[in-house]
Amino acid sequence: MKKHLTTIAIIISLASCVPPGKLSEALDANTMLYTKYDSLHNKLTDTVASYTNSVSLLKNNVKNLNDSVSYYRALAVMPPVLTEGDIFLNQMLGLSLLSKSELSGIKTANGSSGNNNAWLVNFKADMKKYTAADADVKLNKGFVFVDISDKILFSTGSYSLTKKSKLVLATIAKLLQAQPDLSFMIEGHTDSKSFKGKTANDNWSLSVNRATAVARILQTKYKVNPKRIIAAGRSQYVPIDDNKTKAGRLNNRRIRIVIMPTVTRVMNLGK
Image (cartoon, rainbow, N blue to C red; front, side, top):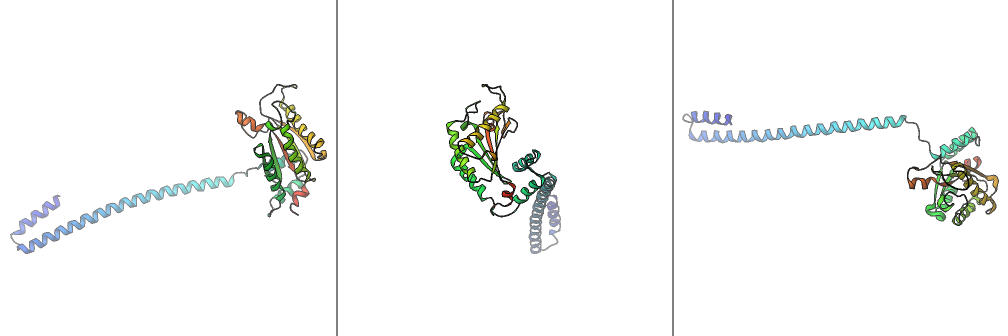
């Protein structure tokens, strides 16, 4: 404002020496210059603000990229996650039911391409069709894991099979009989709570008795070759859910049937 007043004062003091027409032209030119100056100044201010904002966004992007790089670097050095099939294969190796060469052969065969496990996919489809939500079927490393809830197989704390269990086991027996070269392990699993019954409050006994009950009916009623069957009790020590909740305990109480193709079958799937 002082600049404007000073300029006007100077112009007025010289006005007596300048013709009126020239003075008017000079004033108009001065006004245009100041108007242009104000416009350019505003544009400069906006440009600086926009530049500052862009720099801030770029800094945030760089930080996010650095975080991503750190995350993926950490991911790259993490040990590989073992699948359920890997764990089971290692257990079989530890129990001397599998040699190292056989283990290597299974892993190599399962890493090959092609639709060689069609029979496993069909087995899963058949199990889902007949047992619906009562069984969970997983395919892993050439093995089929069939988890059957104890609520349809046994009464609480009992190892006597229910009437409904016969339907489910009949389906499993039919599928097993269609693949006579498959061996399988029947595992009994419990939750962590003790039970009251005729035997001691021991989940080991309950899990073993339930597994053998399933094995026995597959052998006697459905004529499955007993040489193909392994029965085992796992008690409460291999949970798949939280034993602190009712729903978790229900999931943990189960019979798991692990269907194990022979090494030759696994290595020649689809041939």
